[in-house]
Amino acid sequence: RKEVEQDPGPFNVPEGATVAFNCTYSNSASQSFFWYRQDCRKEPKLLMSVYSSGNEDGRFTAQLNRASQYISLLIRDSKLSDSATYLCAVNMGYSTLTFGKGTMLLVSP
Amino acid sequence: NAGVTQTPKFRVLKTGQSMTLLCAQDMNHEYMYWYRQDPGMGLRLIHYSVGEGTTAKGEVPDGYNVSRLKKQNFLLGLESAAPSQTSVYFCASRLAGAENEQFFGPGTRLTVL
Image 1: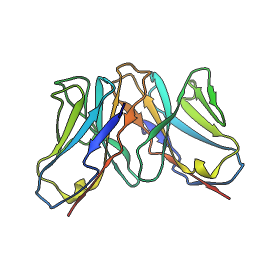
Image 2 (image 1 turned 90 degrees about the vertical axis):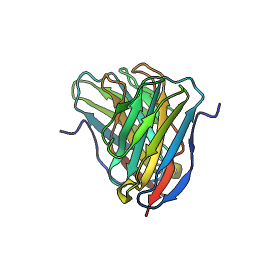
Image 3 (image 1 turned 180 degrees about the horizontal axis):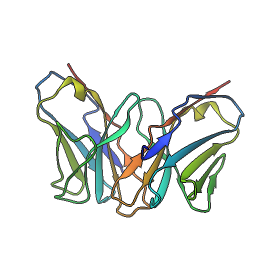
């Protein structure tokens, strides 16, 4: 089993739709979790950290399920500008983050 | 603050040539990283450093060397470039502590002919 796994997509959704991505991780001792957004040919940028209690930032909601070892990202009311690749990252207790390969989202008019 | 900067932005090399990629951060971060990103492969860690004067191997270290002589700089060297090293290289840094996010530089696009 890979350490951090994501469905590569692409997820094709119309504007205004709600879409959710999951990311599974293998190490139950993992300590912190993040969602990054990467636009084509650009660097990854932090979208949000994922807290145990779940957290929301505008149209974006992140949740952590430690029992099943996955994190999720929910995007409501999708915009064209949300089209990007979404990377999850997990700190498994070391000095490095382990990244998934990313899920591509395409929002169409 | 400039954040994380990378030099150069683009470079074309011939097989066998050498070069050094420079990463600089002005956030006083302890940890610094070098990744390469290839289509379908995601981000792969090449080398990293947890402090000035320290370096460690990542997932794909072969063909690369690094140095961290100053806290704010992390250099990635290719001694004898190969076409397989054609990639986009990202540098990143963060504060120590599991809860801290990584900040990425804008990337260097390297082509080896």
